[in-house]
Image 1 (cartoon, one colour):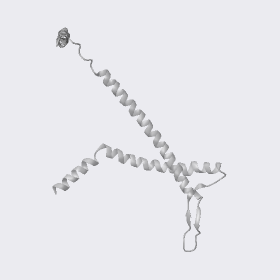
Image 2 (tube, helix red, strand yellow; image 1 turned 180 degrees about the vertical axis):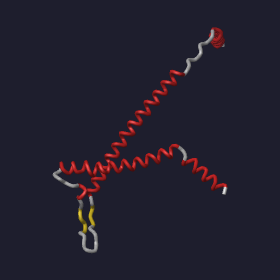
Image 3 (cartoon, rainbow, N blue to C red; image 1 turned 90 degrees about the horizontal axis):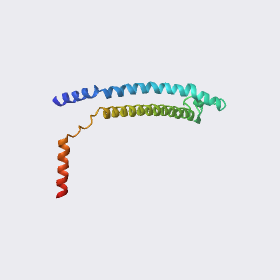
Length: 146
């Protein structure tokens, strides 16, 4: 029972960490963003691309391998849907690239600012007293005589 209690304590500690919550929020937002991007591709971009290419509807483009019958469904390679998925992927990848690039730039700026603040806040080494300077000179003269 002690092992189980330790396991659940460890799990509780893991699940209540901020990074796990941040990850969960990221997954939920990512799923919503994926739905928005899919709609953008299917409902806005691909109709425009299809219009530019002479009214082609990519989502209906397919290569029928076996026609439908009364008892079986059509067997087809739906390459138009694949083209939509590729465009969707490229848009999501590009947006994520821009977000990560902006985040890294912001983080570098914050790190640089912290370094500058630390450099400005670090005290200068204390000046040596006349006695210390004199002792160092004596030490150096003794080294030269050896």
